[in-house]
Image (cartoon, rainbow, N blue to C red; front, side, top):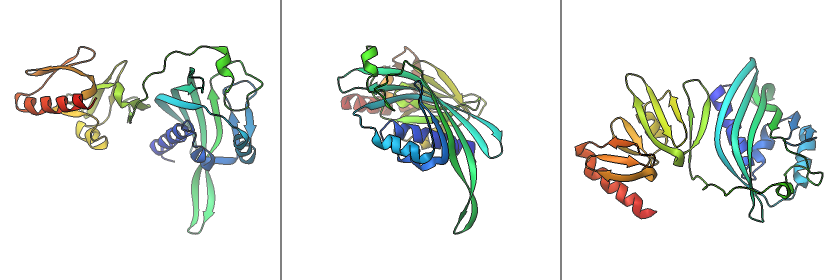
Length: 270
């Protein structure tokens, strides 16, 4: 099992889950899967029981996920532990929104299966543990339908349209909302990038060209050494741009007219 592929698969399963699409979740769970929910006494074992339980759940909740950080531990050749940390907002029909800070722990194992082309290994989830404890309401089974009775939520943040997935220098994997990225700069004398966000900075092992190719159209190449997020540009003058946090970035004279035109066009769309 390749770690990067497994992390991306783990992220995909939970992001689809919170879009109320459970098919990827059901596809990868093992017959003897153990699911440990975030509330008291939430424990389900066995694929059939788990699917039956979810099929009985009726709710009108929707969810918004925030940034995701991923870590991997490999206790055995055919076993990997993937831990995701993320924010999720539960949207209730009343308009209330309740935030949760969650940890999701997957245990993946490789199972040897026979196919028409021979024997092969298939990854499957044998344990899922969501850590987000609150006082359990006996009227609920899976989704915290009555949880809003207990608390008043903050105002919701804007839902991001796009995310980028990057691996930091410490090998942790991060799913970052594109609208939280201010700019991305090349680290001198190293094949690394530094991603400047509204509340954090990440260093990743990648080149600017590779990043731009993976996420076309999200950022503007205003300089050979960095990409900037047009949504965070607050001012442009010869030959600088000022971002929403006050950062000033240079714009080469030869690029200035083109960059200014693109920024004005982007501003007109808003």
